[in-house]
Length: 340
Ligand code: PMP
Image (spheres, rainbow, N blue to C red):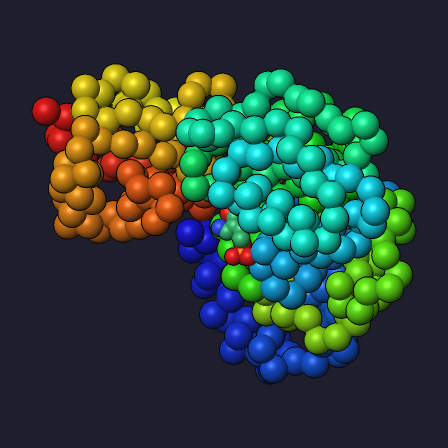
């Protein structure tokens, strides 16, 4: 869900960008009007995230999955990268990295992926440590980043800007935009400028983070509309009080739901306290039939998208930044009614 006000601003910008008489979908990416959009979006991302000049802010076409391969292709070489295995997304990232070179699993929350790891076995000299700050499908979240002995690479696709950004020790943070930032098919990358200098120079330009940093994401035609939306969403975050306010609001919304699940006779949260996601609340019912029943009852009240991801089943309430507290309260009421 995106903020309603941003969707209404987008309607206007598609028709007429900033009074130019030409829509954002129509302006040249090299023109002045889009130049202002790009500058504004970068400035807003920097202000929201508290991102200084030691980090580059990059707008990269394509979703988060592309970075699963791009990161090892840039940085792995003949060294070893350590991966924190917390579910579906880290598995996909590791599969891509293994095609490139050596992967060491430094920690894992297998088999049920209900808790983020607390013990670590790092390899001798990892080139980077990859983790998924929020596991979208299992519904777990790192409260603090893993205590890594190397630059962290974070897949923040599903919790970017839902709470303060822990930049320290990070070489690179990437996030597909479609949860908290904007449309699908574009990712935001926050890259330590020294770290990306280490990237392979043999790759095609669009696979090198350095290219995006050196050419301000304009090596080729970027997803101009996606950049516009990311800028507008970041300005909305600022107008709502920034990341501290988002974190407080998100924690409050999620707590309503977890408290209801913990008190319920029939429904139980999947993730364990201390590892629970404030973005994706995953839960199960006593039987698949009861789960189907709840999903149907929810749909009858206009609540959609509650079926858990096809790979794990159960239910999942995705309550990203723009999701209203009233929506959470409506689900809590429904859980009470179906708690026989
Ligand atoms: N990582 C995480 C944590 C995700 O939640 C997702 C998408 N849900 C992805 C990666 C993949 O993103 P995309 O489909 O944009 O490639």
